[in-house]
Amino acid sequence: MEYVVLDTDVASQIIRERLTGPLVGRLAGPVWAVTFVTVGELWKWAELRSWGPRSRSRLETWLGRVVVLPYNAKVSRTWGQIAAAGQRRGRTLPVNDSWIAACCLARELPLATLNVKDYIDLVEHEGLTLLTN
Image (cartoon, rainbow, N blue to C red; front, top):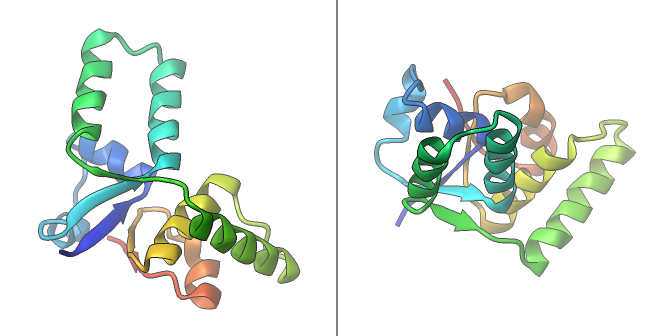
């Protein structure tokens, strides 16, 4: 079974039915997954925006239809390696983005994102595979 990890920006666009462009076609076949980080970010947005019961229920339902990738020891080691390597190169990575990337790299899964600039260093130096518009 083929999987693709959705970055938080892509997940948000899908939930709101606003994702457009070539990425839509690329996401038609694989099973969708999100990381534990994306789940947290989506719930943070719900809190900050004071979502009501209907919107929260919609989010919960959507999350129930995707695979949620949890933390594990391999993800933690991968995060430590890529965070240290980035720091050595003078490229401190955003914490949440580096955790999402570590989940992908540890499982050898591609990441669908609209924020290429956040991950380009990991594409060039760590072999992260991106699906983009």
